[in-house]
Amino acid sequence: MTRPCPAWLAERLRAAGGSVPFARYMDWALHDPEHGAYGSGRLQVGRSGDFATSPSLGPDFAGLLAPQIAQWLEQVGTERLSLIEAGPGEGDLAADLAAELAARWPQLATRLELVLLEPNAGMATRQRRRLAGCPLPVRWCSFEQLAAEPVQGVLLAHEVLDALAVERVIWHGALWRRQLVVLDEDAAAGPSLRLAPGEPLAPQADAALWSQLKLRGLVESDVPSAAARALPAGWTTELHTGLTPWLQQAGSVLTIGVLLVIDYALETWRYNRASRADGTLLAYRDQQASGELLQQPGCWDLTAHLCLESVDAAAAASGWGLLGQRRQGEALLALGLAQRLHGLQQSEPYELTRALASREALLRLVDPAALGDFRWIAYRKGAFDDAAAALFLLEPPG
Ligand SMILES: C[S@@+](CC[C@H](N)C(=O)[O-])C[C@H]1O[C@@H](n2cnc3c(N)ncnc32)[C@H](O)[C@@H]1O
Image (tube, rainbow, N blue to C red; front, side):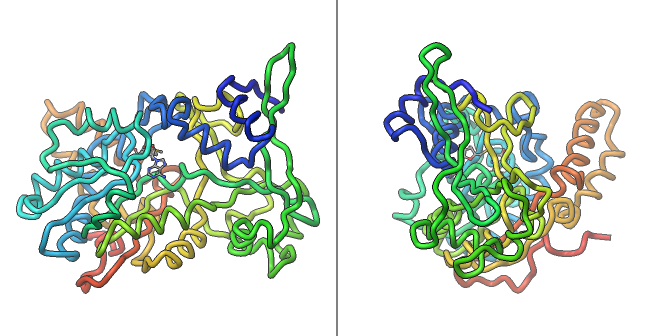
């Protein structure tokens, strides 16, 4: 299927020779500073925006996460500490966590700063507005700036890794091809976009893609694996080639600390199912999900699930040690979600509206068919006293 191509993108594609790998297209559509969905700040996160995330449902998410962050910060050091958030979106999680930590851990808060890593200027503008009046010192910087003077603390990546550009590959029954986005010129109808398979992948020429295919069990040495041979021709999936560079950058900003990734993620065996014939990429806008990845580039969010094994391998290769991982539903129950829900029953009548909104948000956060199935994956860097296990990995309080 073809889709109209906006003038700015047609110009880029012409300059690139008429076609680009899917990852380049995704990067432009999301992060182009003028036209990209995040780069321009056009996409809005939240109930009345393009899509809702856990922090955008209200302050309960941060309220439940705060004890976990406080535990890690206290374990990490007794000096100055940083709570870093990569890709803070509207700034809801950062603002709500800062408020919780300042109110409930005032001693800790006196040596804590908030650092926001946001590559898209359009998003950073709204974050500045949201964080006006933040009770902690707050600064925005790039990974490179922070890496020049690395800090101790906790780094959060909530629904960020799913926004990294991915490559798409197609199985042709005997070999793999990289998917391309192609520009078609038509003087009468105007330029349009379509997806098309590129040249067959060669192990040496496409080493980065090949190593990701290997990791997912889709090739053995330099031949298709038995798992791939069982897949139907045309089966398409995505490869997270941006993960290792991102995790290396993340490692460069902390001397000692914890990285908490919260995102959609699937085990390899679920990712590689024959029935998942189009991979996991989806487009989001106006609270609607769509499989049409080429429609209105720069107006829709594009997001791919993570593969758990790929994240773990990329993290290990980047110097991170796994602390543990859990589904969000279980993690939030361990952090006291049931008690918070129960506590709402004691709300005063004048608090009814807030209590009902809170109840709805808490139930959405643990819904096993939606946000509750998100994964919390925690990694450590450097030596610190973590004799007490991470709170989110414990059994829920009785
Ligand atoms: C799906 S939104 C998530 C927003 C917020 N964390 C939330 O959950 O509500 C993705 C965010 O990550 C940012 N982002 C995209 N690529 C990034 C990267 N390479 N490093 C850090 N942030 C990135 C986007 O600009 C946006 O703010």
